[in-house]
Length: 451
View 1 (cartoon, one colour):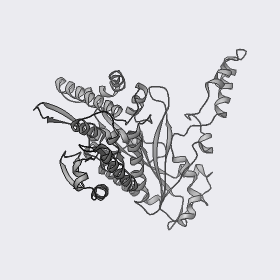
View 2 (spheres, helix red, strand yellow; view 1 turned 135 degrees about the vertical axis):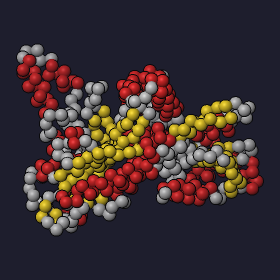
View 3 (cartoon, helix red, strand yellow; view 1 turned 180 degrees about the vertical axis):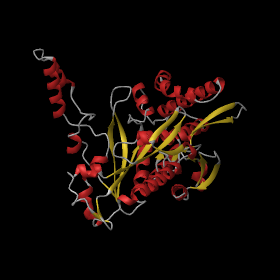
């Protein structure tokens, strides 16, 4: 199912690998390895409930756009969003969350390049007016577009509009920031059709003389954050935007990128934007924009915009490991493991039943499951599985799901309260008392979050 999709999606991006300075044999090997790695990752994401199957859906996911996520993919994206929110709002005392409309007045009044939503029925009604000349049809189509709602392409405008109301929160003192997450439409690429992506936005208001220093500060903070959750931190990097590629209002720009098997992709962009857009949003009235920073000046804006959907793809790609191991018959096999960071992993623990009285063991599992849920530890109820499966097969399945720990309840649990705990990253199995497991998991996750 995925072979055609992967070839179609990657053919353009993988071609960039051919331009590298390497021998033909080495380049061909890199191309094949990259294609195999991505094909394996996408198939695993479908098989293990990270994304829903289907060619179009897999293409959207691989492009870093919002797609139809499965239960594990949705939980991973939610965990990533939560970590982003905590890192931004808790890193500085003066960062406030906002939620703005998807089509503000300023966006609706946008000119060339504005994305608008038009139903096919209304467009067809205009085109079916055969009595109109070509010029009249163009005029009618233009009127229809002007009446149609605009589609939000970024979260910046909403924060600019919220600047003046937010001044009261900070007693008109700088610096402070406004944070928001939400769906935005991305301009059409080679496909010709716009697509949605989950964006994160921090708009930081500061004095004009410190804007460059704040851009450097947020660049360091954001790169450190991405690398914190990575198994291979060096795949995340930052680079200055060349002068010729700067946005019109920006004096400086920085990109945070991830090195995928097919090449580099953008995760976040940081801009030092000056105050032009802020003045335009508030009709050039400087008096209501001026803050108390030692001088009466209009603040400058530093914006940080990220793509969460591409971030999900980056961490999945970064965490996939294909390890070789020998089974009980001394046959060499490949073990696929999603070594996601503990705070990002969608499932922290899987509960399964070993040998023993099934009814009693299920009751113990249900009791443990409730304890985990109360402690906000996501658990997978493997004990509900009705198809007979060996522990080796279960371990392989949970490794591909990225489950941190597998807990097996057996006869010894009924007799002495002891259960078996297997670690994803080491495959080591240890014995633990049932009364200790919840606190053990909580401490483990908390310690990983504080590293």
